[in-house]
Every structure is written in structure tokens, then in C-alpha cells.
Length: 165
Image (tube, rainbow, N blue to C red; front, top):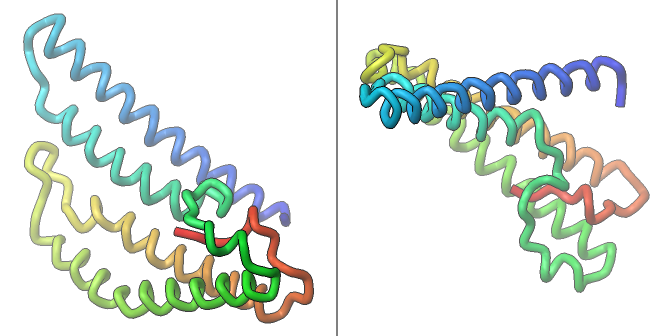
């Protein structure tokens, strides 16, 4: 992996850590306020929900490797290497096609939400949900790259790097 990619991966990890830390701090503050001083704070719930949403999609797009995702590979493991390559290619093409077909409507829906704000912190909802747009684009790029590798590589795809979503 190039130095630039390692640096980008490290920064993506930093964002995920910051999101997790913010969610944890808000959660602990919520517990303290509710059960110790008996004064619930409404904005902490919104922070927890928003950081959780961002953490899941950000990490899935930029932090997790293919090995980190859950796989349903019963059929994949019992077939030969050639058929595994075909399975990987068909699934990658289907993923790219599905996400690419949905991308215009997804972006349209996210941008539509610029007219609404969150209930407590009044954050524009297009900003809150923009992480899904980034996730969708990252999935398209990742699996397009995987298709290119499958078509241009002579060596079989190792199972621990086979893409799944």
C-alpha cells in the first residue's frame, strides 16, 4: 500500500475514533445527567444517534477491509477457484450496478433534506445523511476496482479478500 493510502487510512481511522469518542462521551453524559443529577439532557440522544449513523457508514466505507465484513460464503467455499472468481465478479458487478443505479435518487433525497433540521441541535439533515452518499460512492469505487482486479489478474482471488457487503 502506498504511503498516501496508508496516510488516508490512518486519517479515516482517526475520524472513526473521534466519532466513537464523541458518542461515548455523550452517552456517559446522558447517563450521568439522567440518573445522578436527575436532569435529562435531550441533545445527548441526538448526538449519540448521529455519531452512530456516521460511525457505521464512515467505517464501512473507509475503515473496514473486506475481511472485516460478514460473509455468507458457504457456496463460495465449496466451488473451485475459477467458479469463485466468477462468483466474485458477478457479485461485484451486481453491487456496482445496484449502487450506481440508486445513486442519483440517493443524492437527490439527501439534498432534499436541506430544508429540514434535526429536532434538538438543529443540524441540517442533508449534512447528517450525507455520510450515506459518501458510503455509496465508496462502495461503487471499491467494487469497480475489485472488478478491474478480477479481470486483469492471473492469480486467483484469495478468499480472505473476496468482497462482500
